[in-house]
Length: 513
Image (cartoon, rainbow, N blue to C red; front, side, top):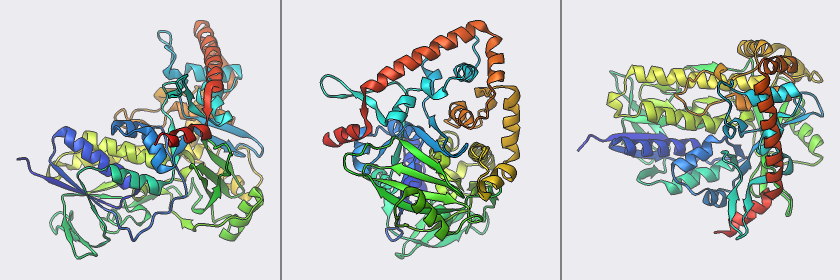
């Protein structure tokens, strides 16, 4: 019998259970004899104020064979087809960022450069979102499903959507789906380490148990209980270029009969921005702001002024924006908020956890005694690059025209990262292309041009004259792109007419139980 490896995930929640699921599944596929334990103390509550994901989460559900409709029913989840950005470029200006990619459904002519449809739309002065299936669905708050004549539901298009949900419910859902995973309701009260290697050998639990293991996943959130407090992993701060550092969370109820948004609302305010994330019964909301420019009392007053109603604040969340220099140190690997944190503008947290654990499981999962410093170096380099890319993408959102408050004047003038400026300078001479984002993650899902184009266009950061010049260099491609764009617009507008309203879809799925 092969030697058994014991993997312990410290901290449950969404990140911890994603880690446990991926390790369990990959170990089985690789023939690794793995025991997996999740330490999830019931004494530490999870505050669910709404979480948004990327399409990587739907890929995860499909990977584990989890029925999507069951997921909707048991977690109160809703669709996320994109982000509605309000008042970012300037007050009164709104743009959408749909997450589908029309390039997936059009076979390009031989030799066509990547992103030619995006380049055509900019050149022609036509909205990029119009050629996205999710474009009209976002504007009409509809689901990417229609009803067949027999009453069953059929998806519209091949694109992966994302979800909104209460993360506390999703952690419980994954726990209920676990097979062969030991769940331990206890708090880690002490740590034993090898005097020779410095690796962790065992955990002392407050129930008197000592838990020995070979490898540990730190999913303890902002506490970073193992990776920082024990392993002393250094932290790289992004506070200069992403200065928001505090959040004021609250809830808003969804009224009976009210249509439910299928987007994350990112609404710029005086000292940061407000999120509104729909679940099936309420909006999880929050004001993410910089306490350099606002106090908690001022932030609450501002929210109540713009909403025209009083709110009940659910907490005062303070955070450090940045990442670990190395997310894997010794025999401890950090995931989720233990590993990095960016403001939740582009839903990078759960996305990062999924991609990072897929990377670990695919390239490095083996008996811990066989893991090498080269494994750790490879993983840390790739994950560090991933989070740096997230930082640059989020930082790009602050290249705005707004200068109406001290916060906006400061961020647009002094807080733009040099990598952001370098990319934007390059895109003044060359339209953004897929190949401008080198594959650093072994082909795994990552931020690419399909997410950049709506943001760059929405902020007015793309040059139509440059796009026209590139299109004019190949008249046949320009004609092909025009016809493809027009075809997609017609097809997707017609599809939107057949699509169910978001609330009607959710009601239909709930009735299937």
